[in-house]
Image 1: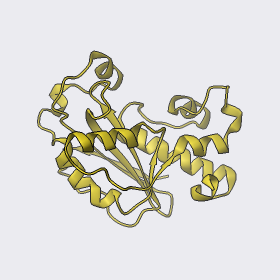
Image 2: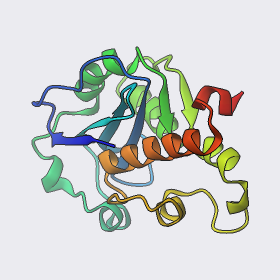
Image 3: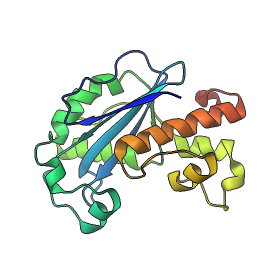
Image 4: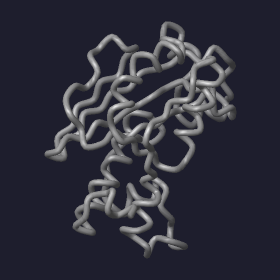
Length: 192
């Protein structure tokens, strides 16, 4: 599968065109889900190719040592990055016109809480969970490593840098594509 990676402060053009779905992942500055410091998207085309985009976000709050150690993002990375409202406004037209995939329920909750903190209405986006899709494709992993990205990375031989929002979004997209191939069904049918 082909993919490109763009990572900057919203100056590069966003992926364009029609997509089957978009996987989204966020990283946070601390334990507050609204403290988004990076947003990554992986846009999956009808031919299975993936185009990724990631941007730092200035959460305008403190960074916990735990989170910084986990994802490697600190205040100096986001000093010139847009705030959440600016990033959301730029990404929302693309995200509102495609089904979204998240790996677990954290990303949707973080986006909703960040919208609340920025006094923006929560987006009425259509979300699906790649964990649910993975559970249906690989039930043998239940109680045997689970369906987290780290375990799926090993089992499915995925190559990505964990805890980078763009890379994790791409990994979630790859999980869905692998599940579709394994089951011979498009992901909406897997969830039905």
